[in-house]
Image (cartoon, rainbow, N blue to C red; front, side, top):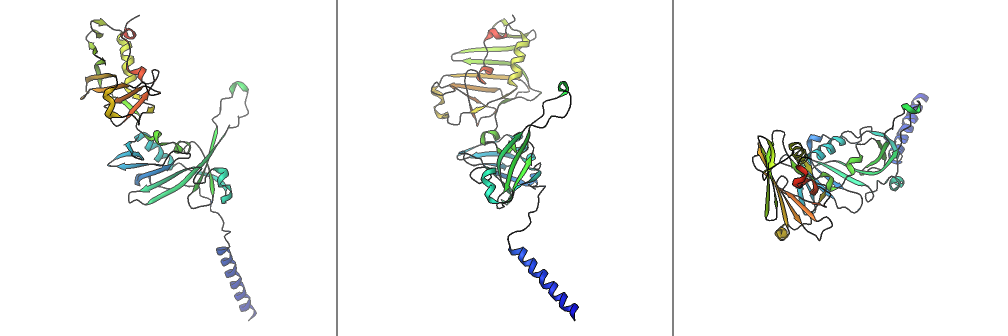
Length: 325
């Protein structure tokens, strides 16, 4: 009889303990080594709300092509930047729990208004992941004990802090993968001004400078223009720069409807395996801080801005620069 009473008391005590643990709010935090778990092949769109005053933007997959949209502006995204973002999502590994309560959010900058919020959606519009990237810590890696002449510069240790939306815990993540995920809208845009395939062989290009036309032609004897024999190596070096040329500053505020009122220059490139010649048009607007607005039929949705030392300087060269010394 006494054993039965003891058993009943023991069961009752265990039940009371279990209920107290359930409703006390002091649940044990589960450490998540794999903080972000998403099938990147199933991702259809990503919304990024950058820290600071930059408005949110969306990266959306449409017909196999990623589109970057912010407010009324939609443009083709850089496929390389998108693949890097998706790849980094799967590389986020938790190092430790940095804090377990809300009172540390501000310190680690994982409050909604202080961090960069990333929301990942699947094909059906389902929210797959929702997290906030907070501050970054940079610490110099300790030097190994070895003679000074053999010491090498160590890469800094980068620690980022992440909070999953709807949870209290702040996690520390070590590595470069999160650092690039906090970039703004422009970092995901297509910056290509020109990009030629390997099989494309340039055999002619011309400068339209106002009313004058200067044509460069590749002949059996090398490059020439207007009867002037040129240093073919210098011409090829110039063309090699153009084969993969990117802009840096966007000119989204340029009014293309009024483009005709500005002085223009045009570079046209043609050759073997180039079905449609590449055409780059430069408008000169002296009211702008960077007065050259550059447009290419390779990336017709985008205008770039440049000053005289930027990408503009790579497009047009004086004939003298191609002549032998």
